[in-house]
Image (cartoon, rainbow, N blue to C red):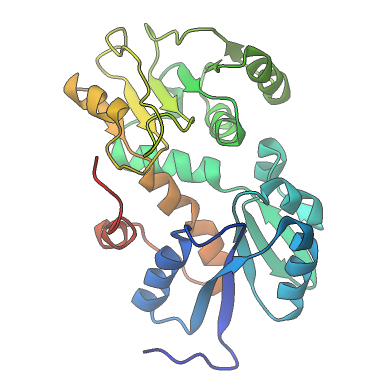
Length: 279
């Protein structure tokens, strides 16, 4: 057991509720593996008290915090400064307290790109057009990251076309909206909706039109193997589950708070996925 000293570094995750978050397990593994004198705590905070809670954490000596549902947009407004990733995403998921200031960023897009690069070796955003299912916060972060990394075209497909069109206008650049996924020339298909998640209806989609070299990503990670990913593998396509995005998005925050560069490896994945159903 590692005892915390007066110099221990502290961080946590703010959410309401927050008991479901796997971030304490994730960061706890890194802290133990790297032998760092620190702790990462679950911090349940009601939306009415979010700003005061963030400022109190900074006053108490916390190095920063992750932010999860429903606080990501509120976190944007509480920051003294936000970087380009947060501005593009319109939300903050990582807070760093530095020199009396609250700095915000959004690492979801970074986590997505790193996960796909690690799991689909050789993939690059510039390989070809991408199709994104959904138009919520996750779709915004993923689309922005793809565009900034050189994706030639992103097509949004969403149940509410109006919402997809609004997101396309916000993002700017080569972003289209379609009623059905244009898969004939897609190099990447990404599900950013909750369809396929445990307790939700499956995503019913015919993957036959996708090119042989396409990559299929489902940001859902409960279960690890969604029906969409199973269908992709059955066709011989490269399939990437959502757990990698969760693991990789945590790296920049950990480095800022605890002063060490963590590694996403099989041991970390096994710890975080211990209670996640495989299918």
